[in-house]
Image (cartoon, rainbow, N blue to C red):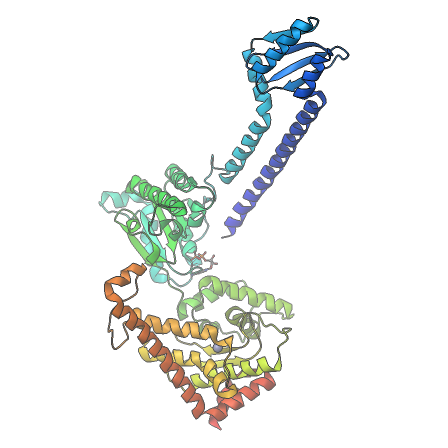
Length: 597
Ligand code: ADP
Ligand code: ZN
């Protein structure tokens, strides 16, 4: 993503230039207005004044143009010409004719309009407006900076320099994509066999799992250029530009083929077409253009379009039809071995203490993406430097893990005794309840030191990556989550807002159990997860009501079980909470020791 910054820089340089030009233009416009106003004021005579002056015989000559709106006046006592604006010439002419009879010594010059002169005058009068239009035009242009030679927001790398060996883990995914490399290198071989190579491949996966990296690696391995653009950049800014950007991106690709076109965040343009209003219709136009482009190039043009998204369910189905993005590869968050591989890759150039065990760190970082792991090691290096360690020590890495998972310690936040007590019981509640739940992870650390947004935290040891989660496990997870609230209620006979996140997560689990995993007794294995609210209507009100009843039942049960567990072990709850109040943090060993006595 470093290249993106470079592009941003270029963009902002140009932006400065445009802003300066715009300011100069505005200054110019203001000056012209002021100059014209000044000039007009100096030389202007009011209509009434002119009448009076003619009657008073001060005027030597007046000059009018048929169809014009101003009159030039030459006074007897002055060399300067003055002007008066007149709305309607007819009554004035009548008045002047009457005056002429009485006073023949003043002259009237009635001119037929000189076309060229009128045009010139008009141009001059409209100059400020013209400048304004130019200014607005430039601002519009600015939105499409570089569109002439380059598509806005687009990045191009002739050689990404990334190879498959730079992508750790993801072995199966690399295997699946390696044939794309072969094809880009040697398209004739495939064509002569009559093989159809996919034009578009969708990469599904959370942000930071390495989708961009793997796309670059394909380009790097095949030694072809890599053009990329983010879906959100297509649709931002002014209406109508999205579609033209898509067109230009593909024009470019055709010129430099064979190449890889990478569209990040494709859900931003490719989300389901809905109504025809405003931003959505802009989105639709862009999506339609993308479909046209995908259909428009032949598969022998050796352009491979890779697109990334973490919300596959949002995509318009039209994108997935044959000949478009008909191939999908899921890029998962790394498993235990994958994480170890990634850690190995990113510690190659770092000095590590002997006690650092990458396998162990991999075990402590379940759910971390490649980007998060690389960030973790970077944090650890920063902490090591700050702590004046010669090499990165185990403690630096552990501190970095905590910083990333639960946020930074907030040492100087002032906490009242009452809040501390509440937090102590809340966290003790989570920890104690978990200890009695078979399926739940072991407690690694409990603390009432605020971190990030949380007043305290309970950290668990997650040592196994799980692919399936059982119903019991989900139920127990809810009990552990509600253990915090239950402890507040039992020990302090009051409840707080501190449990809001726990409750949100627990409710989400219950809802998914019923609507996604089909785990309710009364509704059975039925998927009630719908994309649009109206789709629920097919189930009828009885079923949607039942969903609510079942979700509530699950959460209520978990809350009751959490309270029962804590009442059964109230002594331990008090001990853990007291210890937390004294020491603020309890380690795994100390926590476990409370249960053996
Ligand atoms: P995505 O496109 O999926 O959001 P990126 O490819 O931009 O993620 O990943 C961000 C960064 O994270 C990469 O530049 C790389 O440093 C690191 N990274 C992510 N996954 C991996 C991986 N499997 N192997 C090595 N580095 C990775
Ligand atoms: Zn909690």
